[in-house]
Length: 489
Image (cartoon, rainbow, N blue to C red; front, side, top):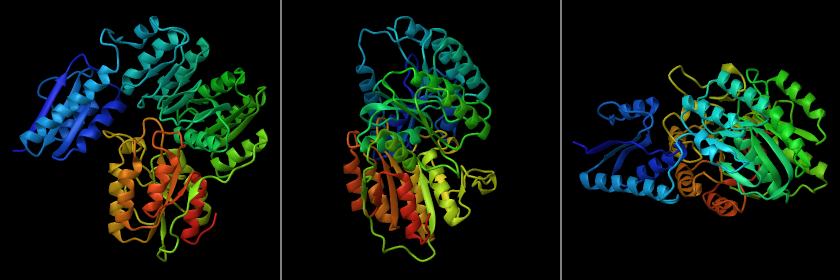
């Protein structure tokens, strides 16, 4: 019988991103066939049961679940010890004498002003913690997803009344006064403020600005639903007003997936009343792509548009009749690719489609083996249940690349690789061998800066060595992929 270890630990908490990183590190060990290190929420207990690793007896959401399966007892013992070491290393970074606060409210009671609260707990518990921050007069970044939209609206209305800002829910990227939060890149400081209803969109824009020698004052993420009809741009309006009052911000760029038209109109009217010029980079079929929006902003600033960094790839190995396969980790970058490609290719199917009838949902999940022109957002919530975001753990996307190669369907593969804090420390290490094994023509949109921990050039060189064409601009990468298959946008 295959040896297993299942235990629950009380009095310990770590945020979901860190625990996913630990799970991935341990899962990569030889001899480990299954691993789940997570808080014992109902969803995670369900996932553990599906793996045959459910704990005996009752479990509480504030307990830490450690569940492992290995090939033999020695490997299991070593894996459990590795989990303990990873968790202990995290705990040792704090003060041995400090007793951590159990709630946001308790932590803020002793915090120096001004303090920004960051909430990263399961969605059903995030509202209470965010409400505590608002009641204490602090802005809050809600990293958690799974927050009901009606609770999001209530939080943002309360924040407006209190004169603070709610970033999120599902806010994965922000930079506040030079401090990077979540999945953010190392970019220079400067005069441009970003309001972003898109994490990877904000990363693309801030990295292009950095490549042009222009920095950002703040990147205020507002959550992907903020410009929906249901939320009505509540946080976007407050973020625009906050940047308008910031003396370090001379220009503002609004970055978003396609917004609800009536909300976009409301935001445009409010922006026109501000003293700080606001330019929109909200994606739509009628709007410029993100790179074009950055180039227009550079024109506003009197800054010359540079030649965006790129590495050439092999363009002579494209089979006839090739289709476009976009395998993305960033939802906004996937949307941008589809908006650019659709006029040239026609219908592009996706799990986050431009039109409902193009949805890859089969009723039993997302069809990752669909034929024809396809763009998949591997960061979509439906594909990240029980697993780390693909910017942390590329396993699902790597499996899809291998399956595409085995299918024999002629294709040009279009990918994004997003660098920065929180992301895979060396994405090319796993991706480059996978691309070489697949033997497909590949184009990569590499989002990042030289100052990122992974280093843009180091990653670009490794991916180019594997045969990929690499572009800092997702729009340029998409157009090059279309050129390879004989279409032009």
